[in-house]
Amino acid sequence: MPLVDLDTIHLEMIHEVYTPEQNLLHAELHKKATLAVRSLPAKCQLVYTLIRENNFSYKQVADIMGISVNTVEGHMSTALRKLGVMLQAYLPPTQN
Image (cartoon, rainbow, N blue to C red; front, side, top):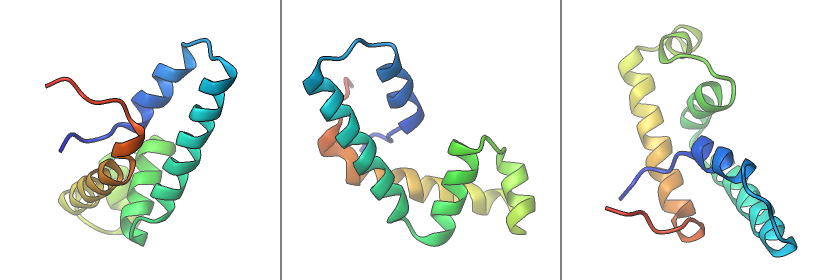
């Protein structure tokens, strides 16, 4: 199952001109993505938020949380996998 990169999705959408229907769909996707992030286990959510939304490095997150970089990688991998599953229905099919 492909990983979902929410940052890429958001950046791709910024460069497009939307119809009212597309604006509604974009708002719905944003809402679903926010709810999906909030539904992650606490540590996965914190790691995801610090890295993807606050632009911290894996090393910085490890230092902040008092865990190893490998553990941060594990939390991020879990977060991305779960988000991919939760948001798959809202994203265009990927080309393999």
